[in-house]
Length: 233
Image 1 (tube, rainbow, N blue to C red):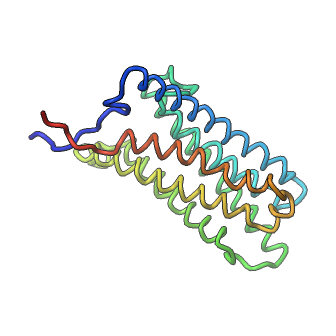
Image 2: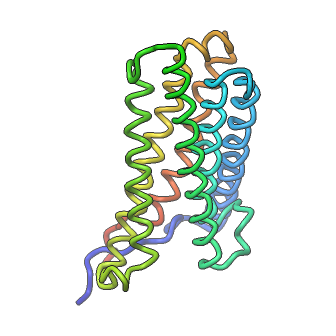
Image 3: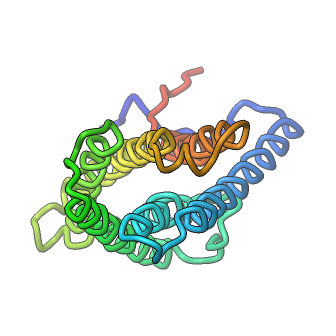
């Protein structure tokens, strides 16, 4: 039965010159998102000086998990500016699994160091918005991983008939998880540790940087899965 919606290609209705300009701008944005995610991970890791304390491992592990691995795990499906554009869809899916597995491992490690640091210093847990939202982010990350496992074994779990809807839900929930992670990273920049380390204009630059990859990821997912009305002549 015909559907009243379709997943329209991006840039439909543009002139040829405007279309190519749009494509190059998207490509530049994706490349910049890769650089931003990697740059944030490296700089936060250097600022935390891993090994100087139990806490020092927490920012490094979490930035590696969410700023780098989760960002790359999503952007590798982008047709513009992805270093894995030559890979087949199946190859990209396997790389996606690998990146998301690293997210779970690194975030669990970072959480363990944070808990150990709090216990040693005898400080209360979950007393800031950063910590509360961080726990929510990790919980939704685990749920999203469970959804991903269901997509790997649809026949085994008798989900073959609902696989297209499951893919849509997985992509939509993945965007929610990524936005939660972005807000958690931004809230971390209001912590005593970060404000004592980074000050002035540099602090404002760091505050804004995580939003750029989030916008690119949001654009990628919505353009791929957002249904649009069919045009009738």
